[in-house]
Amino acid sequence: MAPLDRSKGGTVLKNAYGHPFAEKSLTGMMAHWHKQAGIPEGYTLHGLRRTFGTYLAECNIQARAIMEAMGHSSMTVTDEYVREANKKRMAVDIARAINEREAKRDAMKQRAALRVVK
Image (cartoon, rainbow, N blue to C red; front, side, top):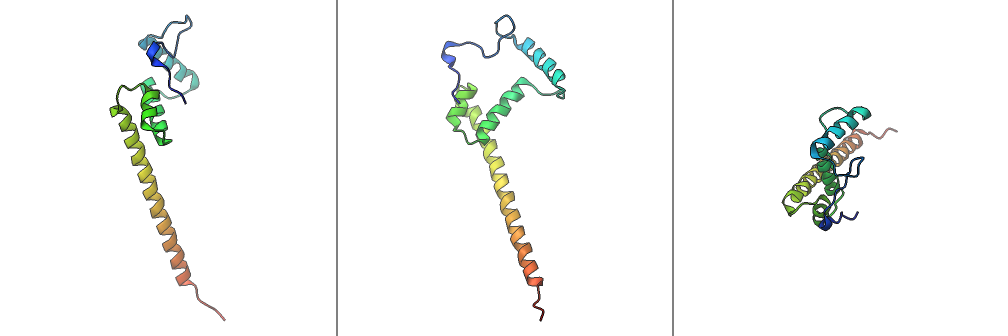
């Protein structure tokens, strides 16, 4: 995934006239699209942007690439995405280790309960 070339400026989303959306009109259009799609209220463009950054971090994309794709001017905000993704990864690893340990313990209990019958 290549980041957009921001050195020339420009916009990603344009209205029907080819002009950049005004922030309020884009927010209004997003609300309209939500309604059309049957999506509950409360989702925002910024939330969509954060979801994108979080998804990149959870996919182990390098922090520098996330920073550039998101257009962050420094690593400060990008590092938040990476930290949160690492916390989730650690929680999943811990849960997996606990589940494996419990499964082994249960298997040992079942073996101990078996008796040889002649």
